[in-house]
Each structure stands twice: as structure tokens, then as C-alpha cells.
Amino acid sequence: MKLDEPSAPSRATSATPQKRLLLVDDHPVFRHGLRKLINEESDLEICSEAENAQEALDALRRYRPDGALLDVSLPGTNGIELIKLALSEQPKRAILVLSMHDESLYALRALRAGAKGYVMKREATSHVVEAVRTVMAGGIYVSPKLSERLVFKAIYSSESDLGSPIDRLSDRELEVLQLLGAGRSTRQIAETLYLSVKTIETHRAHIKKKLGFKDAGEMVKFAIEWASVGQN
Image (cartoon, rainbow, N blue to C red; front, side, top):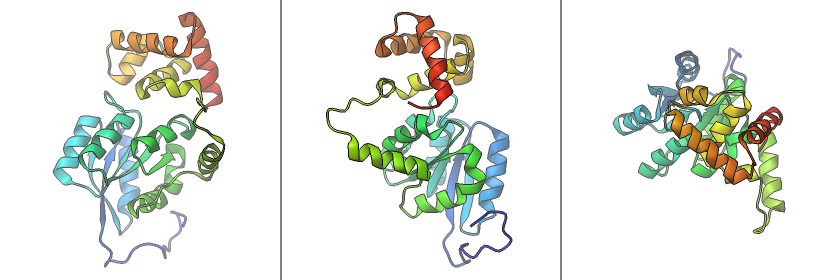
């Protein structure tokens, strides 16, 4: 179903119980647009919003929504960690990730953390309603491209497969690497992630050690090249 079509035969009837959702994103304009889009559906409702992980956890406990839509990049605790925290309190909660990051960077990590779907923000207006309904019905929603990659990996990987070196990084370290690749300085990364400069320097040191770089210049060069191809 296309969202701009006037008729919506797949929309639920008034007898269908409405699914209540929490929306977690630190961009008010994006939240406003997505809330309007979701609330136009008779079977879906954004019951609460949050702009960081702590607000999200408080809202989950207070409103007990049926599911949550959240971004990966949040101030402080990131979206991947938020997924783990949310599911530790209610393991069956349906979570859909909406992110500006290419799915090749974070989708598999989000699914491993317990999310039921991943949609890139640039595709959200076209696919978000379908994705929400899929995860709320107990299914998993990813793009056809990612689905093919996951099947390929499942078929051809083995227990001895060490995967990409990037897989050695923690979720936060991956965020730092991605921002380094975008040309951000240590201080800019700290401001973006609402962390101290010292914490970012520690993450940089861990990245350098885990990926075996000789110096910071080699690491930054790799980050820029890696970000340009958009894959881990």
C-alpha cells in the first residue's frame, strides 16, 4: 500500500485493537512528521515520545506501549543499548529501528540486540507503516537487499568464520568510527554523542588496538575510506 493513496483497503477497521507505540528520536521535526504519519492509521497510535534512552525507559514503564520505534544515534546511551535495556524488562516487546545510518552498518547489530526490524530514515515514509505492522504481528522487517545478505551469510558462514574486523568493535566504538569517517574531530564526536572528550579518546584507543592500526592517522584514513563505501 502506498501512503499517498486516498483509499486504504489494508487499514484496520474500528473493531481492530489499536497498537500503542513509543517514538524515540532526538530530532523534534522528525518525530512530529512520523507521529502525524503513524496517527493517520486507524490501528496505530504514537502514545508517547522520548529524545534519549532514559526518557524512553521511563515512558516504557509509565505507558507500557505495545512497541517502540527508535533511532540508533541517541544522546548518551545509544539505540542498540536501549534495545537491550528495554527487552531486559519486557522480552517480548516489539522494537523497530529507524535510522539515518545505512543498514549495512547497524541493522545486524540491532537485530542481534533484539529488534524486530530496521528501516532507514530516507525510506521511512514509504515503508514505516508496513514495517510497524509486520513487527507488531510478530514478524521481522528488513529490506529485500538486507534479507538476501543475511541468508547468504547464514548459508556460507561457518563456526570458524571470524567475520569482518569491524565486528570486533562495540556498538559505541562503531559509532565513533563512523563519525571519524565523517570527518569529525574528537571534540565534535564528544559533543555529538554527549560524552566527554576523555571518553572518546578512550574509544579511539580501543578502536586502534582492536583493528591493529599503527597510529591515529592510519585509523582516521581507514575510517574515511570505510565510511565512503558504507559497509562493515
